[in-house]
Amino acid sequence: MLNNAFYCACRPKIRNFAEIFNLQMRLFFILAMCLLPMAAMAQGVWERPDTGKETVGRQEEMKAEKPNPDAKYLEGAVPEVDGKVEWKLDMDVPGKSADQIYADILQCFTDLTKTENQIEGSSVALVNKAEHIVVATIREWLVFTDKFFMLDRTKFYYTLIAYCKDGHLTVTMGRISYRYEEGRSSDGGYVYKAEEWINDENALNRKKTRLLPGSAKFRRNTVDRKDYLFSVIREAVTQ
Image 1 (cartoon, rainbow, N blue to C red):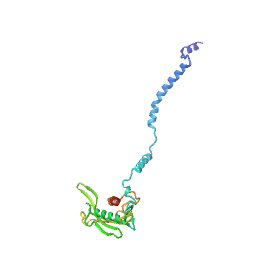
Image 2: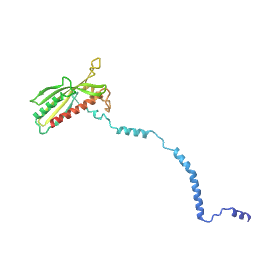
Image 3: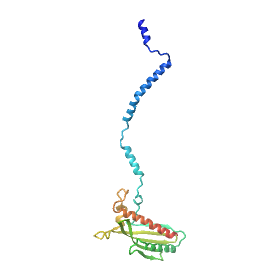
Image 4: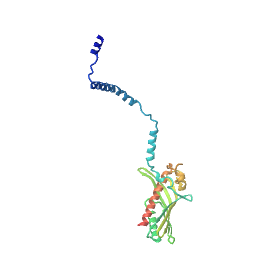
């Protein structure tokens, strides 16, 4: 009887259910606060291992997205006909006769041989007025670099042949060769034929994805020069 009285006096007096609930919530809050630092520490320690695949994948994507500045000069940019490098311009010229186109081309080729970069020997070599054919043998400087105290260029030889018909024009550019460093080298410089220097076989790597050192500048500048000449010819006969 005495023991029961002592127990009742020492026991906490919890009067109702709300007080029990509040006590439980306080205990839960204290426990949560104790576990929070452990959770943060676990989050900072455990992570997904880096296998390197994601980094490699991103690098490959960047390479794939980056355009190739030499794309214009890769496979197919320098065509060959019967083993010889040759470009062809084939275009309709509506409303003009063969005589008119012939006159336009003769003037265009003559003007070309008088431009600043021409070398002695550049001329309209042959004409056939009856067949409406004009042949120009061009000798000019092809400049790679022209900077202060640095001039890198080559003599550039090629032949233009124009075939004129009523309402149509065909121009070929072929017989291409280079004379490089004639005044710099003790052996008189280097002579390159296009078929041995700028064609796909000799100027591109095996995968045809990049230009090879040495011939790269010749191939780039020759393609650019061809594009310019054909644009001048188009303009001459369509005015």
